[in-house]
Image (tube, rainbow, N blue to C red; front, side, top):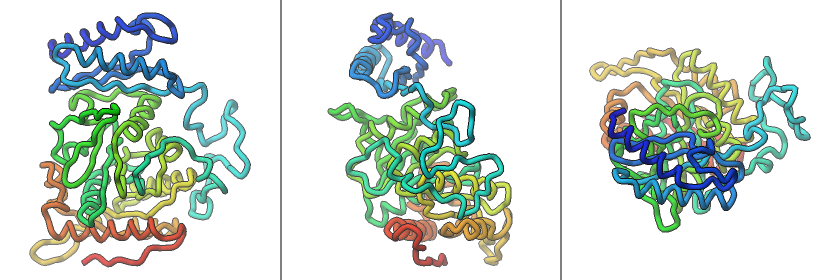
Length: 399
């Protein structure tokens, strides 16, 4: 961190210390509520404040005051205040039984070590969808999580190009990147230098790119600063990027999730109005084991699994057309069939996909073959969303 940036953070901390914590009546700097302060190279400041769940009117007033005083600090281009929502009980109770864990609700069986996560065992408990509560997104149609459970399988590339394809099909489409530890959407969309602005209601306006409305923690935090955030801060940031952004009107919102089945995924599954989830994998077994875990997690939380996409399925020689299955052949298809989940299709190993992500020009916008492939995938996902739950979508062949 440069000395000037360090000085700016010190100035922000100083003005925040001039505010009074409504709970303890101490100066905010001595109350322990300031969790983190970061400043980007362009002067955008992000402050994390601890609060209780749900936030009180006093918390909301404190947030407005904090934003005003930080925004007035010389050298700060804009201020964003995120408030972590802590509660007396964990928001995402562990699925395995513990001595202090609450008793399962009627009809619910907690996931235990050694459980069989085959499709018939991974069905959600009766009424679980109705029991899920949390964030409302008025004016937004379908909300689809794009997950991988395993890192390095190209999930973000798929999410970006699927969103672009839906926009090309005429849908009002949004993309939310909630990978707080490694946000890649700004790079893939070419929007690293763009900062979101607040509207009259203090909601952030999404950054528009390639026909999409987009939001990412990468727009708000220093590009080179590590996100050393614990689960509650991660969950609060995700909640705010959903509820404090002016998304409407949208036909579909894709959410690019971080790898794994941790706090971010559980926050979405338990609080967001998810219409379904897509699992991205490569063909090899080391990735497929995590696909099975990912499918089980979404089903346990009553989120419909719309299907599995196999990325990097093969490499096709441009001269001869011969295909080489570098990571194995058909693994994701076989796994989807075993889990009774739809198999949505294969995506080959293509240089244009990588290049497009590196330069901020998604391949679906520049390469007709990729555009056709992702539009076909998007149509199949839309068919899954429109079909009654459990009824397979029509088969689409890629050529």
